Amino acid sequence: MYRYASLIAVLPLVLMVAGCSAGTEKTTGQRETVPVAKPDVESAAFFDDRLTPAKLRAVDPCALLRGTDLTEYGQPSGDVLSDLGACSNFMKTHDGKPFNVTLYLQADGFDFSKHRIAGLPAEITADSDPCFVRVAYQGAEGILSSPRSMQLQLDTELPDPCSAAVQIMHEVVEQIRTNPPIAGRGPAELSGIDPCTTLDPVVVRDTAMGVTASPEPAGIYACDWHADNGVDLKVDFATGEPETGTLPPADIGGVGAAVLPSSELNNCRIEWEHRRTPANVNGIERVQVQVYNNNKIPMDACANALNAARAVKSKLPVG
Image (tube, rainbow, N blue to C red; front, side, top):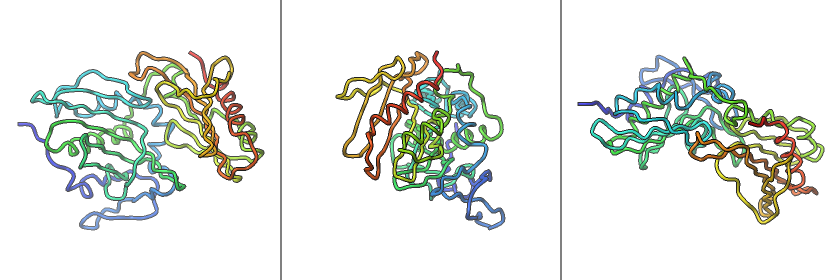
């Protein structure tokens, strides 16, 4: 008989594995013998220098899943790339029931205060179907921000799916720390490109109406620039068909880009298709450039966003 032991009840003791390089508060186990760092999920710090954006972008998510002991639960199937930095395995348990697991290297979250997995702040939605388990690797600053995390989604008929999800996530984190599988990618794949390198400081200054701002990673496939005058700039990589708006597409260096203004949010978003890839179930890699005019200063958000989008487009490799 196969063992599906419940881990949820013992998470604070069993899964508080040390490995956090940042944190302002210490907690201890039940016997108060081994101090464990408790990262501040409200700060923008990275909680482990082995889980920085550059290192996570280099990782192969499918190899990470294969490196966990999925055979404990059943017979693994083939890899399915489902998003940037995401991989699924739609397998069967030893009893022939579904065991569908997807790993996302980038996700958001809500409450990371209750659990730790491999020493990292964790969130477990044990009351949902499927079960979602997240471990945060970067904190958050700002009202609209949330901690950046990895996410494991498990859809199965096992009586305690979150225990299996926690165990798999624990193995994922330890793999990244000790022996991360490096992805073999082509130069044009967005999953291997740092979005914070796509804009020069001069372009950022011009976009923010003469105010400089430094790049701030927002997970591994997005980057923010926050100027002191309330102008924010964001570059985001994603998959799926670009949205079409009511305005005609704009040329940004030989590519038609959607122009998507929002008067309610005082922002403008530019989207375009970067490339098509049959290896990914979503099939299209797309780029988004957004400009937010939070203080409603005199500016044309769409004109500035288009200029920034042209600069980003010129930096991205083609292939």
